[in-house]
Image (cartoon, rainbow, N blue to C red; front, top):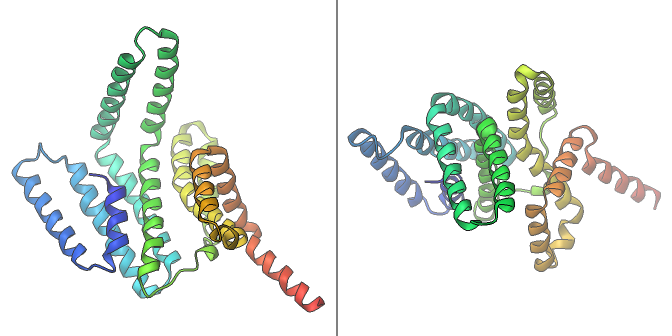
Length: 277
């Protein structure tokens, strides 16, 4: 069961097909029964993710969206909710989650030994890479989980805006200035050794939001150009996904936009040009 895909599917089709909610509630009820009849089949963390991770997030998203008529408010609200839930989830199920990570990477090492047998130099390189990845997930698993949920909500929002009467001008997405204080807080926590891991987790949780803001800036300036050619658009998306440096640049652009508001600068320049002409 993947919370990412579950949430994305519910958000994408929940508005158009209300029966999807019925299916979800039946599915959730079935999990409740399975959980109490045979707990070993369904770990409590999975049960919690289905109910509180996916179910509550979807409910809050649609409730806030219909009340506020604003996708940004809905996305930011459920993002904050999942930041708190992600932390509580990790504290509550820490031992189980870390054991799961350990078992997954142990299987990776076994697979690597089978695939690269007889080539010790390559095996050592791959194992070091696996160890570094395992250490990353061990330290920053709460943030990784929350980031995945935020991306799922954003992608789901794009689908909802196409099917729902509430339209969304994606290129104007911009987080409130108050998020600067959250950013400065986690940066301050990242400086000190004792709180560094908490600060980095907070930064990683903010990354998808700033990534969304950076992408909205790109859409504002170059969206019309890329929409003319689907091939170039697909090429751009692939290049972003596979290039971490490009993702970092987009995130930094999103961070800088909180202070500089690049789209407002562009609009003011156009107004000045119109007055001059």
